[in-house]
Length: 364
Image 1 (cartoon, rainbow, N blue to C red):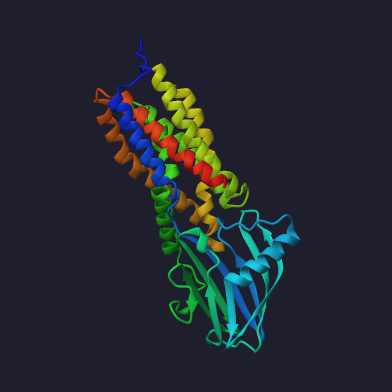
Image 2: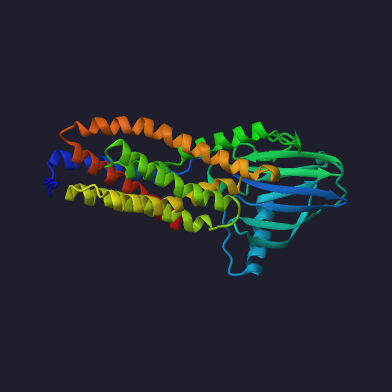
């Protein structure tokens, strides 16, 4: 079958329109994040006399630069002393960092002690201010406090950074886990992550942009689902672990590559089903590690690891179905337009441009 190639030149009006859309997309994305979710840091404070033992787990997106482990410990000491203050009465509790390192899942863990001027027997003895993650946009800093049999926690964020004050003490969360409630929470987390993970959405849309026929669509979605499910589960179980600093730029590159593939195929008139399936499967493995990144900041009850991972993955698939339910009818409408190829080229250019901005942001 002969396919007419896309002309090398487009009408001026169309070129101007595409240029405006691309410029607007790049401008808006300059300050946008591909994941519009809240990132969470966690700190455990345990009182014993005048000492507060501290374990600080920073959010995965938080990075401190240091040449070696001693440098990282010193930088952590300086940074958290300035941005996570603990006071006993009118005097400061002095932080002494014993160890700082990046875990296998790529987040910073700091352990040490706050030396207070007087014994700490209850949370009300302390004044805390937490500003450590202001650079991350949407963030939460959950501080668990223990003193003997007393357990409570504080939840800091950009709008509530002081205890007592805007931050209120809450009773410790129960140790017992309701399996049904836990399963439902991880299912919702999976749905929310895919629907607010704009880079995953763009990759999925670009992957199906030229696919026609329900069987071809089913095969492609099955390949993508199988690929990201495998790496999501392996990462969730700690078998395969790569830091987000590596995964996130590659995800952006996957969008750029798929956009380029679409434009090349539109010019040739060949949808290239085999190449598209291989590409989707390969990058699907990377996206699975990206999905797992959100789990690094989410505590999973030890007895519920496998069900939690499974339900999170099911939630991701449910979110994908929602996206497809909207996208496929729109693509069918585009197919009926006499400007089909121009629309698809414009969409590929716009999505690829967004991903290029994300790629640059994630390298900086």
